[in-house]
Length: 110
Image 1 (cartoon, rainbow, N blue to C red):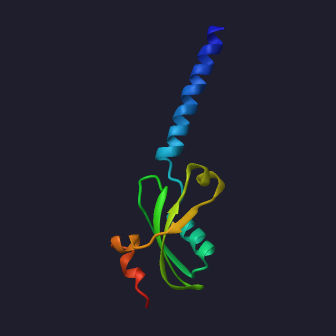
Image 2: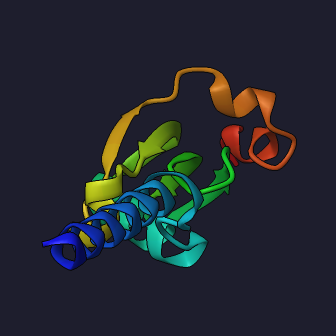
Image 3: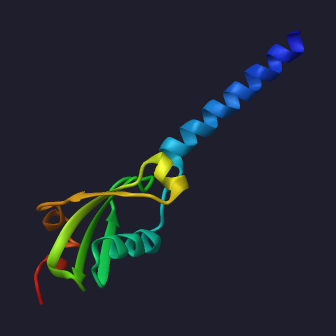
C-alpha cells in the first residue's frame, strides 16, 4: 500500500511539473510557422511577426499585400492547448505595432 501511494505521489509531481513547463517555459510556436498561419488566415501575401513574451504565447504581427489593402496590425495569441492543436487566436492590434521598432516601418503603405 505504501509503495502504491509513493508511485501515485511521484506521478502527480511529474504531471504537475510537466503542466507547468507546457504553460510557462515551452516555446509554443516558431516565427515562420506563425507567419504562415497568419498569412493564410487573413489572406495577406506577407506577414512579419515579433514575439512579445518568452514562451511564444503572444505575438504582434503586420500583414500586408494580397487581400489586405493596407498594412494591418494583429495580436496573435497561442494558448497552451493551441500549441498542441495548431490553432491560434487573432485580435485587432490597433496601434500596437507602431510601438515596435521592427514593425512600425511595415505599417506604412508602400
